[in-house]
Length: 266
Length: 338
Ligand SMILES: Nc1ncnc2c1ncn2[C@@H]1O[C@H](COP(=O)(O)OP(=O)(O)O)[C@@H](O)[C@H]1O
Ligand SMILES: [Mg+2]
Image (cartoon, rainbow over all chains, first blue to last red; front, side):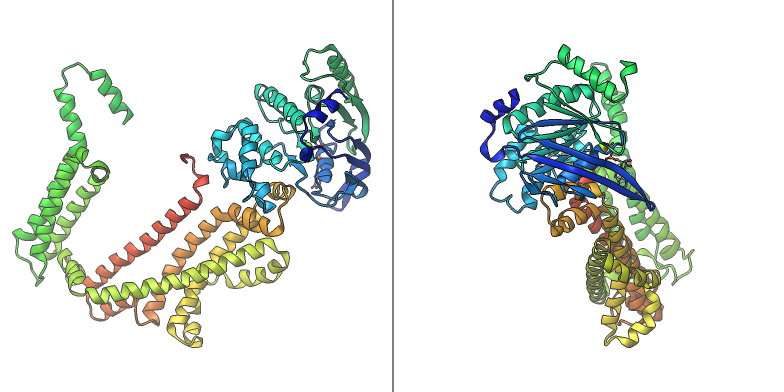
């Protein structure tokens, strides 16, 4: 809750986070006629401006849940709401950053970041926002570069800028740092926290790294094996910037790894 | 090049007259050689009497000397000629080969008739075609370009639109795909007899056939390009607020463009074939017709002259297509500057 008050001061009104309600959501895929249950009765209620990390075994259904939140797919049962409004389709107020940056290779960095505004037909009057977003991630000098000229970390920063330029109310991050080297990763973790504190959007972060979840989020949700169920919902009441060596976080980490069935190794 | 600068650096300070000469020989030796082969060509034109009656032998000999002079001074003085000099130096080996080839050709045909005339006309008789039969040749070029361009543009446009529609819409695919499978692989020339007889004019028939030959590969490759666009791109665009029209115009089409160009390239090749056959059989104009006409008169020099023009045009068209592709697909290359 420390963060919540901090961001109440920092956030601009237009960009404040939205509340997210995931209510008894179940989902399944059809694979060759057999049903593969992926989400089972998941209910999560996220406050505006909260930073929620989702942890779970690989393949349990985390990405599937994020796609439902984004509105890219519809759940088989249950409902999702953004600020009381039911989510039925994608909307630029909920933007996803995927594990792969998926930049459009035929567009320059600037044009990639401009994608959202262009798609919404407001680019002409708001070009400044693209420049601002590039400044925000520190890539203004690469505006004319093409994606194949960027390193992995830079590409992911561009993807972040492409999301942020829309002033999302909910930022959805699906293992965005998963493929980066550890140094770049630590730098970008700090950047994400500072962006979140400045902008005040609600953040959902899927990660496979318990430490990352604890350094970034003020709430960590642990899922079970597929079909994913909420196994634990842990508050992380520590001020930012957090330290990796913090004994409080180390304790939580042990607890979380235990929930993930890894207690024997730690 | 890098080894050169390295040895250059090492040799600095040492007496270096030998390396300087070696360097000069490497840079300009080929140019001198080119000049020699062209002088040989010029001499071969003027030294002996022609065995036949050709009017351009003398001028050709003079032109060969001029080219020899240009080759010599252009390569030796390349450092003062900027990019033109550099380009000339790069092509000098080809100038050597060309001069040697022309010399042999000249001697083997016009001078000693080792190759049977009239099937192997000498270079000067081909030059004669370009100077004396120019209006007719130009008319033919113009007719061919017009026919080819019209048919190709129609075929490429229709093929592109069809390919995008099949790739995008299941319903369109359902109806068009079988038709495409049935008709597409048929060589467009197989339609020739029917087309010339059902269309109001041979010109419209040929245009249709060229469009058909172009359209099939363009359709199939555009389609496969659109179909192979990763869903991740659509997901990203949709979460950013893209409408279906944006997904087609700004995601599917740009992503499919590399495939489209492969189709355009293949279509160009097969449409050339149709163009020539159509001109030979039905259209009374164009380079194909010129070839046919020259054959009727046993005017072999005219045939070679027309063939050379034809190959220049075809390769020019492909070069142009590649230039457009490189411009549009600049993002694909690793050498973009910004
Ligand atoms: N479009 C799909 N069709 C069929 N099965 C899918 C699809 N997307 C995901 N799955 C399956 O759903 C399960 C959960 O996937 P996902 O949500 O990506 O897991 P993760 O928690 O690792 O992100 C996996 O077993 C995966 O194979
Ligand atoms: Mg995943």
